[in-house]
Image 1 (cartoon, protein in one colour):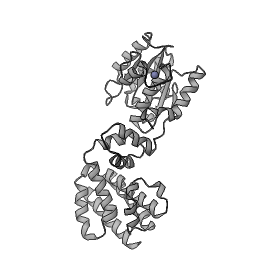
Image 2: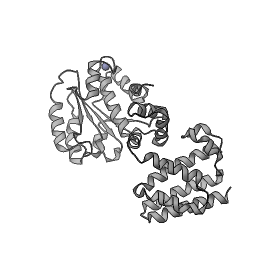
Image 3: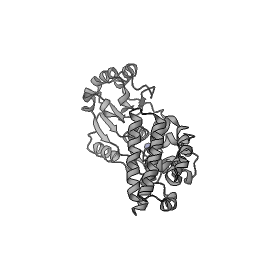
Image 4: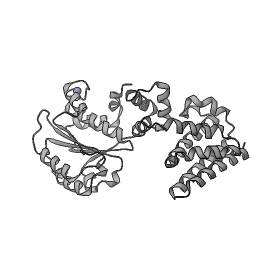
Length: 324
Ligand SMILES: [Zn+2]
């Protein structure tokens, strides 16, 4: 699967196709989902779909310009993606929205991460969304729509974008990094279908070490004499203990699937033999999984990190030996 085909597999494409076919293209769409990178990518594909005479072919000058961010009628905001849309951005948008498009039949404003916009900026945009110029349309993206004014939401057509499957994330990682397939699979299994997370961990030099540590805790920690060593390794990543527990819970689930004869649900398939050989029982795995969640809650309520990590490791061993 080519990464460019990702859009064509989405419900969004069907919706846009229908709206175009019925000549009922909305003036504003709100793409909601958990994956920021995917949403921002799809917003761009959406713009290509509307403006390219080939329905977003991906190869023509229009598609190329949109891809490179240099199409004069496809304007991407906010200027500072971390800060979100500010009043100055909206003043510029409103002004440009009333100017006729230069090379296409429509002017498209892509407003990424709209939920982090200030409420003043959202309010200022409202009037333009209520009475939009015919030649302009807006594509908003959001991972947290509860931060968007209801008045904005009610004027936009909301499309929910689900997370991707493992194969799609794998293709994305292979296209966007120098990783080989075997390495890429390590990241895919931890990304949980989220491109934003995948990109973050691909660029994280400690990720592989952390993942290896989690495999060792789940598969090799067998005696109380080793607890101190493992706990100090976890504490080396003091700020990332939540993440380590997340990763560990994925591995425990993997082992549970193997022990429950559901190997097709396993994320880290190259570890199936190790999972089979581990001396965890199904009962113990379920209990330890509960202990991971318990430890994560304790961290959220600011309990002492060292105590939480030690307590978790001791508890895990106890359960493992009691329910062999
Ligand atoms: Zn095209």
